[in-house]
Length: 171
Image 1 (cartoon, rainbow, N blue to C red):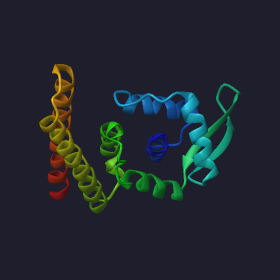
Image 2: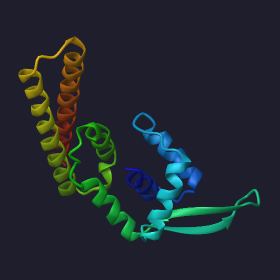
Image 3: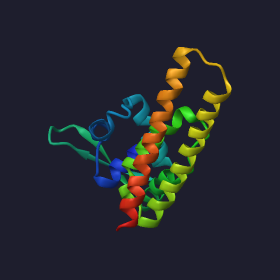
């Protein structure tokens, strides 16, 4: 997911590693706050794969700085990462779906509709599984409350996706 966030920020402007970190924190801090220890190797991987290019310059303060920019292949990779089918692990679905939805404006209308369909189908599948768990198992108070809350979260994300689908279809 870190690569998606980095490419999203670099798609908007050229940044230093500090700028990438700051932009991610400003735009996504309620969803994630990656450390430099996560960002630095991810930038290196993206550069090695040809998705990001670097330019070294002397900053206004006289210190060397490395600026990162997205390549055409990086733009294609950003879209691929957004459009990749959701993972099967339900614990990763909600944060990943929220990040993909927040980055959807880099996609064209058909790509957005495809992503929304994938996310909605996966959310509905997890919702059904959660409902089945609640209906087939005797659960004590705390687990039942946790799973009831989870069902509310999935209903909310489905409602959000349906709102995006309606807005996208109206374009």
